[in-house]
Amino acid sequence: MLFDLQGRGRRNVVKVIYVFLAILLGGGLVLFGVGTGTGGGGLLNVFGGGGTSTKVQVSAAEKKADRAVQLNPRDATAWATLARLRYQAAGQGDNYNAADAAFTAKGRTELASAASAWQRYLALNPKNPDATLARLMSQAYSQDGLNQPANATAALQIVTQDQPSSSSFGQLAQYAYLAGQDRLGDLAAARSVELAPKEQKATVKSTLANTRRQIETQRAQAATGAATTTPTG
Image 1 (cartoon, rainbow, N blue to C red):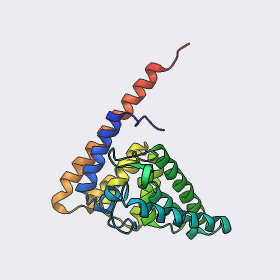
Image 2: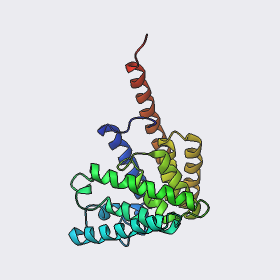
Image 3: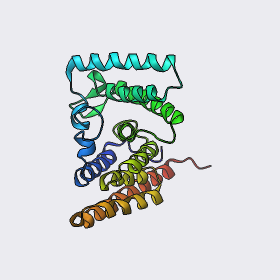
Image 4: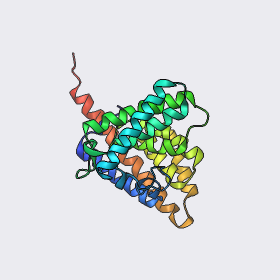
């Protein structure tokens, strides 16, 4: 991990920035389910919802998809299906605590399984990966999920190539900064501003610049903390 984001205070700061960015930059794509391929409902209602029948349906579909990749491990489409279903399963039942809006340990295990299927899919289909699935996986890799900003960045690069928008580039910029890929973050931020409506350009630019500063501050604090705890001699 590049630096510690597990502390509640630090994670909350980044979460607030992310939610503000998502709403400002047209974040309905992620937060409210538009374009996520989940069949309606984004992060705010996919997880922790649907009831027992939905959980059973997702579980049955996931088992079927798992059998499909066992029978044909070279089938990229089957791996993509499995990754999507495992991602959905992470939000069902006791995998997700709706009251805290957080994945449980079981949910994170399911997300890790989704990520594993996603990586197998990418290995089999590196030239034309599904951008909609990549968007879902960027959420699996987010701070509230697996907390792997480098992998979230890679997934969002796929999204921006297929679905370029101020929103998608803004999200890419944030995760690139979190992953320590500042040059990529700056390029994505500039593209986000370029694609933003004229009346929002100044606000988008200011918000992304503030995001960079916040993350740099966290990085510096983490480095200072690590230095003070490193044994000498």
